[in-house]
Image 1 (tube, one colour):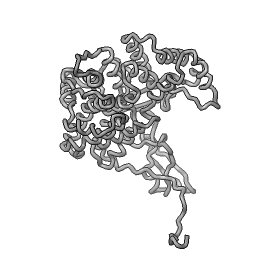
Image 2 (cartoon, rainbow, N blue to C red):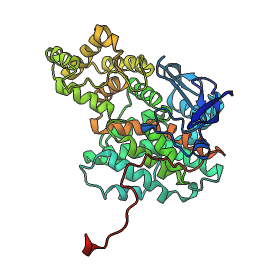
Image 3 (cartoon, rainbow, N blue to C red):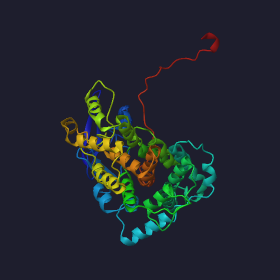
Length: 428
């Protein structure tokens, strides 16, 4: 702990503790600010406020660093697999071979959902957005699995955690199949996590489906890269919901709802829509000029990042994965992908982009990759939710087990009417 900080307000000096993390900036502990001064802090968006203490994920946006439990994201995505990352986020350590086999087995044996969920899906319109279906179906899990909703029981917490990680891809695949009018495909226990998901999404009962290992590995990397991202909007939503004592399924449903916002989980969809707006390679100079014009509202989506002021560390792996998928599928005449590849080339060499550090981010590459793999844009955020579930669960579990955690209750700066007396209706 560093030396305390002194604050002088109206001639009164108040001392506040300064806490130091294992890495990253120090934190000013203002928990007793109101008690000692009668004042609150004002921080819209909480961008200068640490809402919790966490051991899970560390981000240094200036340096382009993302660590899961201390491990660089590129090493995990390149050398491990998604379920290994899930184990790391949940338990704090990379698994041994025996622990990995046990963890994979437990997740795999939880992938089926209650058969009555089939009828639940039939209540939706066929043209319902898959994210609307996900919000409802994830929340509905608490109606089917009463034996894992007691948050005070560590065993139930872990069962709920395993169920969420295992069942999320099944629900996501069901949402997709329902939207296109195809029958649901049951999970298959002899397939790995992402291969199983691809089969549930793209297989049909009338013919055999063989999982492409290159596509499965690519999706596995996408899941790993999206597994957690510190205290972002959806994770903060999960923690806030969890602070009230809500069951884990309800908390994750809240996270899915928050992720649905276009400013959060819809960024890769927005990037793809931008590519569609540009249309062809010959129109790129026109749109680049518009992007450079401060008076033009047009913005290049998928470039730069709110947190990363340097290159998004996830984008390097995603770039490689994108080209692997395109080469595997032999896609050479898609005008949208031609636009994306040329935009990428310009962004990495144009002085304007380099000076402003507008590098292609993970959303730029993941949108292209998912489209090439056959997913419609309406499923992009759903896939994000599947990947982020383990991060939400790990953060929720950490919060529940933190003895200092209290129910979330942000303050406000009130600017409404001052005290006034009620006037009866016949005198107004």
